[in-house]
Image (cartoon, rainbow, N blue to C red; front, side, top):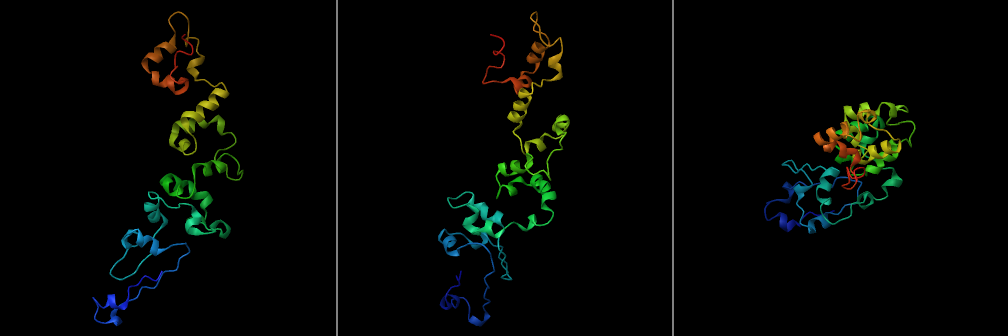
Length: 220
């Protein structure tokens, strides 16, 4: 980490070495090599906010990932944090009331969560494995349609709406109320389902689309 130039180089600009302030390396807890980054021609200001007072701050992890997400290099946590799992290394934000408040941060900036976690990480907790913090009450199935209509994006945080809803509704043989009407289908003029299909076929495709055979499954 000692990357200061030699005295001869300093004296090319300075008259006296005594007027030069020396930067003290900041204490850090990650595996890092300035030499490796300098060989890649990385500029100091790409990572550090350097000002006239010579005060330098260590970059946040988001700054590191601005480059590391787009170059061929190790992105595993251990590459920089060593045996962080054994040491119990977690962000400072996770230490106080995080279990109760993390949903707010996830909604504001999901990309921040994805720096460390995959989508499956959320699902492992929120599908009921942790009984002390269930994401849905035990009677949620009876009112989930109201929540889904109220804010579909909340559902999309964990579920693939286009497949998750259909798989469950088909298994339980749950149909829209309109489909149970005596006017829904008949052999004379097709009934109400023909009219609605002509008006808005996309709505039918939400449930019935099957590799392009939307109507052909019945009308052969």
